[in-house]
Image 1 (cartoon, rainbow, N blue to C red):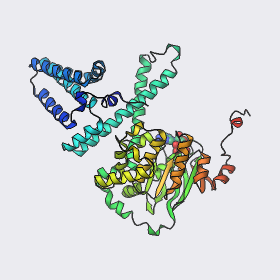
Image 2 (tube, rainbow, N blue to C red; image 1 turned 60 degrees about the horizontal axis):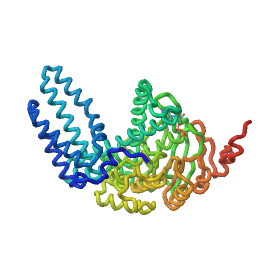
Image 3 (cartoon, helix red, strand yellow; image 1 turned 90 degrees about the vertical axis):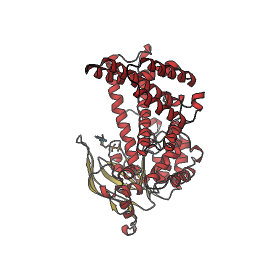
Image 4 (cartoon, rainbow, N blue to C red; image 1 turned 120 degrees about the vertical axis):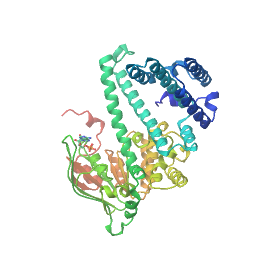
Length: 462
Ligand code: ADP
């Protein structure tokens, strides 16, 4: 399991680690104010600040070299300030600015490296920092992990293809390209996380226009037995790919349907329409409501999406906070949101992991927490995209049992025929962005030759 180094440092022990987070935050603020208010010519004062930081670094018992290397990340920013100021004809001020930004960066790093993020955010809350600022820091922190994870994956992939010479894998040109790809991939991943946040009512919480439509969404009596109804849905991606080409589909109350089909047949694109993360041409109704901008908040509360990659779905610092994210967006008070989150975590068998960081869990545990996060919205429909991916057989069995016990209507997008057979009463087969057939799982598997291959079939050459 990969960890961001600073995160690991923050959990170690030293006199600086054991100080109260609020006290540290106050000291940091005073330090930042003092540094920025010190005139640039007062070099002695800067020396004193540096000595103070050195003493704090020593008290943190963290590796000085590692701290210095991370602090050096601030240098390009300090240098940019300095060069700009120099250009405008104030060399002394330029030097002062560079020193100030470096010292401030180092002090902030020291606080973060000696305080677990949860406690840091808690301290900000008790000191009444604006909610938006706390949320922004939380997401920045999550994105730091995203970039770091992505960099780690790419480094491992590069190492595995580095041949015998190991060590220096990337030469300059390749490294520059890799940095570009790193940011593009991190961006994509961040986009996925943002989608997961939207799916749990995030926009509603920040946009403020949701409650009314959520209330309107309660009137679901006259829609008959259908919780999802889709007619003639088309969707084309901006690059011209026609991913959906006239889909008709329905899902009944309490029913469990398996969505099968080849890679690229449009399954994921389709499910993203069910809670308005994509908007195509045609008609999509969820619990009697058309999926339109005005209804999004209500729709997202009704149709819970469990993403294929749980790492995208789990974005808060602890399991409990993550599951409470959705209910809080529904407008529940923090204690109520936490109580509901605890109940859902109990239901999925994760009541013992409330204060763990989601990224420290196993794949099966992450999936359970992701499901708890969706259940906490009290949806009528659960949409699960490839729920068995990354799960070992015991975790798959556990998941099937958990899902079988949930009363909601379910749509399972899966390649796992056995999993589909164990849960679904109907299967729908996608081909080229259309429904090519439906029936029982066995009928569909037979009709489209969708049986899992045996070992001898996998290697047959014909
Ligand atoms: P499935 O989930 O069945 O594997 P998808 O819905 O992911 O299928 O993809 C359907 C089609 O849309 C594929 O041809 C895929 O390449 C294309 N597609 C998916 N996402 C994008 C995107 N963001 N931009 C362009 N094309 C995409």
